[in-house]
Picture 1: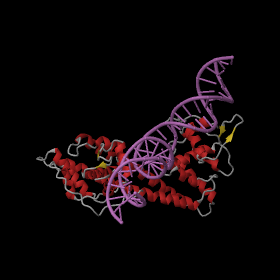
Picture 2: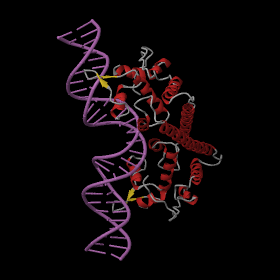
Picture 3: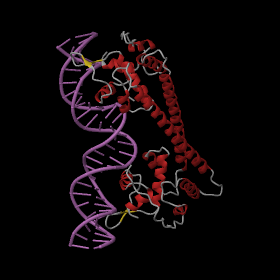
Picture 4: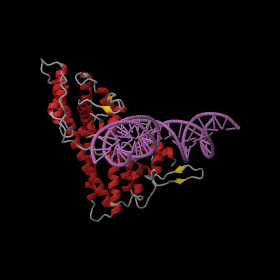
Length: 169
Length: 169
DNA sequence: CTTGACGTTGAACTTATGTTCAACGTTAGC
DNA sequence: GCTAACGTTGAACATAAGTTCAACGTCAAG
């Protein structure tokens, strides 16, 4: 099978297949005398496996370390380990997403809950105050500081101390 | 306030702050006569807002288009629109994650459910077969093709037709 | 024999979000 | 006045997962 046919059968692009080979995800493939790559039918399955793993959240790097050269002989322990860790990763991400979503929903509600007699600027101030009070964790700011947003712009001093290091992540 | 102090109060790095300015996320800031950037206390709030929005899943690009130069005057409609869309995005991602997780859990269970009398290679074949049968959507392969994994390696022909274009996304 | 489709390569480009570096200027404390 | 800490710039580097391009070779049909 030539690379174009393989691309059709897997739904991938030829550039992607060559890329996978380049990064060592696919082992170097046989060539015909004209230099064309020639794939065994197996290759369809391997690429399908890669696509599936990728959709499940594995990086190409992870897939490479897990994928055996012989589909019959997997590293059972490493595989189960990776699967378990990936499930945990997903759960962590799910938790973060749920938080983000809840946060956004509260924000939307809060914005819409503008008192009838409040103008937009004041409402912006109210919402912003609520938001910043809800998330003091990474901001060295007190609710008082939010008054900076007042129309009067009183320029209250920002407290010194209790500051965080700017650590590179 | 000089940039180092701002970095400390926001928990960001100075390079990040300069980067935000470079991409137009922060408007160009006042300079002292020596060329040093000098920030109003407001800047702490703005950076806090940016960080919060980013954690909620907004890209810097999205944040830039939403963030008004004056915190008093938001584009209410654009903001609500963006929030609503972001919530929908999160929900879509949640659905995908739930699917991935379920898929992985089934896979783990399936691997562990190896019949006592089955060796590892045969189990690999069994699991792989199940997996590929579960996801026929993007692979031009029939369950029969999975027999390619047999020790005998019978090289069954891969069917022609019903193939997909390799469209670039 | 020509034309178009397919194949090959290496290198450069992409996106998003920054970091790091070199070379230089400024400032505060001793 | 020296030194350390801080500030400035532009450019290059990093990551992940590819795509695109130019320049070239091969093959099948008409």
